[in-house]
Length: 106
Ligand code: FES
Image 1: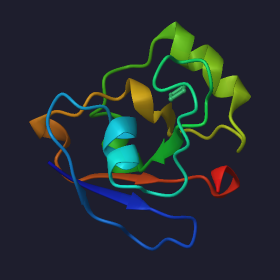
Image 2: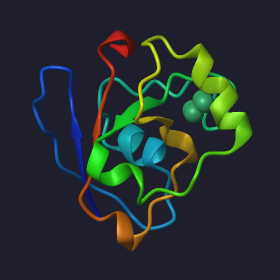
Image 3: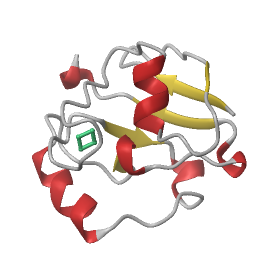
Image 4: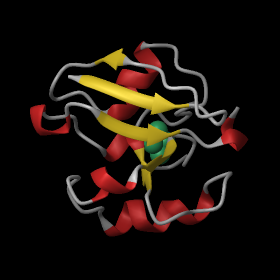
């Protein structure tokens, strides 16, 4: 799967991931700056915040109420496309997924 995270300067990075990985894990494996993921995917840190680009928002599974609750604690204010990347499991359907990394996690 190819992913296209954009950094806050809107520079696109392309990275490869395996189906079944979380978006957070793929970003950490690629040493992508901006995803700290302090809790390692346990849904307790909110430092894996990303903003999913509008075309992709409806293609992601809906968020759980726990994820919804944790989005109140992100360093950058929540936006319409905000998700916690540790809760996004990558599938073939998400090939090409584009997200923006919040500046304030840098
Ligand atoms: Fe901590 Fe996602 S890695 S909430």
